[in-house]
Length: 333
Image (tube, rainbow, N blue to C red):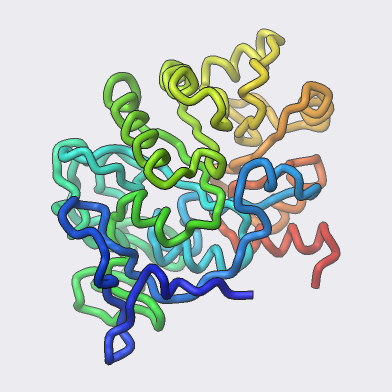
């Protein structure tokens, strides 16, 4: 069943989407959502319900960057309509304090302009063509011009795909995503480190408070001090351990605190194979849920293998292939 978004967006007389009349417009990044395409209702809308499904899940890593422009509203919408359970986002702050969805600390890998996010305002970053370097085969800078299939959509030089608008190919705020997907669990990684990351953590807490959304997020950071900082302020939010805690877990044999019960790991790291049947047995014995992010080389065969080993979830760069692997596992045609 498709969940209508008409409460969040309006439709112009020409069929295009436009902000509803009651939308906030004074603060950057808080505008009403602009994607018109309806979305399916997810199987679970809270972390508790997600873990109670009794089956593995699929997350759309950065909106599924192998098949959609990285961290785009277009990509998140397409992944949701493929049936993914969780939307995976990276967040960081702009110079004017808006929490945006973006992986790198600069924009050079996705946009023509290479700007450091923390040095520019939301409006300046939002204006960029964030699908500039996306092709059907890679996000890269060395392909023929014709291969950049969504280049120019953001700037109006090329029409948007049916059901979408130019801003779906921009750098967007986390708040816009939360308005568009009020029923989806979000896996949120706070980027950067130190004070900058803690400022983003504070902004995230403020946003989650505004939308009463603490029960539908999993929060992570590579920086253990940021994980601890967030947990101290919001001890009931589901979290994943940072890098130091995971090194101690794997190499030191130390157990994780009870509140770090969702572990997110790659299959291998710096030559060490992490995701093995032995790891799965230990994790399950300690009550740990494991979401695997392959971080490259992602194929249908790899997804099948990870599910067979015992992944509780796959944070997939290719949602369609991950959903194929999951449906095969579940016997769903």
